[in-house]
Amino acid sequence: MDAATAEPLRVPKLWKEAWVRTSVPVIAVAGALLAGLAIIAATGSSVTEAMAAFWDGMAGSGFNIGASINRAISLGFVGLGFIFANRANLTNVGGEGQIAVGGMFATALALHGAPNLPLGLAFILPLVAGTLAGALWGAFAGWLKTRRGTNEVISTLLMTFIALPLLYWSVESVHLLRKPMTEVSSLPESPEIADATKLPMLFPSDPTSPLHIGLPLFVIAVIAVWLVLAKTPFGLKLRAAGLNEIASRRAGIRTSRLVIAAMAVAGGLGGLAGAVMLQGQNYYLTSEFTSGYGFDGLVVGLLSRGSPAGVVLGALLFGFLRSGSISMEITAHVPAAVVLISQGLIVIAVAGSALFVEKKGVRK
Image (tube, rainbow, N blue to C red):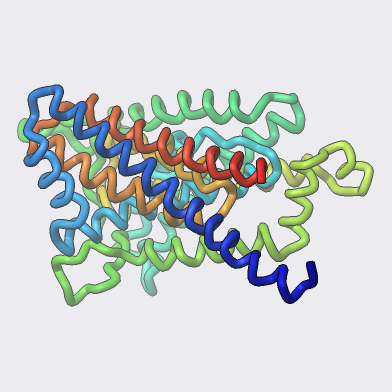
């Protein structure tokens, strides 16, 4: 068969592969949603009310859409950090702790020193402080791996269980970040940060839109991570060290520095997520500040399969799911456990569909 006759035969095959890659995840997610609705019905809750509340929380208004995107931004930063470290075959599971330290240092700078700074430094400095705090937290895990041989999964996970008590301590102690206790309020939380330290809104003329400049920051981060991993010698060295560390050392690559740098970048993005959450969403620090964003961001990174574009899609999915789930729990009185089960089913569906598509491609 010559090339002229072989080429037309390839087109249907390509269309078929594209159809499989597109349809399988959609069908899997739809099945997971139906299973979640069946569980909701089994609890005695109204499925109709639950669906209406879920949709309203996700996209029922311009404000809800903006809030969902803001949640996706924080999840996306953690996901980007995960894939950056994973390029060097490192698994950063410490996003929750990195968010915590980033939020703590951003709060400290926002409350003390930054509010009176000019030229936008009032909100920029806390962002930088949160990023640097997360970077140091991640770099320490990289140092433990290179100097002490500690597995980064263990170190980043255990460091999370250090960061979270530190977060609790910081908002419990009046000598640290806790606001003065009064008869009106004695909750363990910090004072609200000054308006000058809050992230500027993208659409200041529209009071119904909560979108802030974290969105363009996230877009810049996505492009930067893609460029570094795909187009720079540093990204190539990360890939080489991840594939074969011994061969990389023999080729003259200092893998220990790469490991520390990769974990520092991952931690810095996690710390930036915490700063963005504090300055663009919460405005004050609480003991429940992280709210599971680090672990959801980890799932976003896992499901993205190393692609920055995949991180964007996964972050949007989980950001809108979070908004819908919160609304469903509050408005339709669906138990929180059922909400978590439904989210877990969707994660399994997405991961399983990706594995199915990959195996199908391997067989061909």
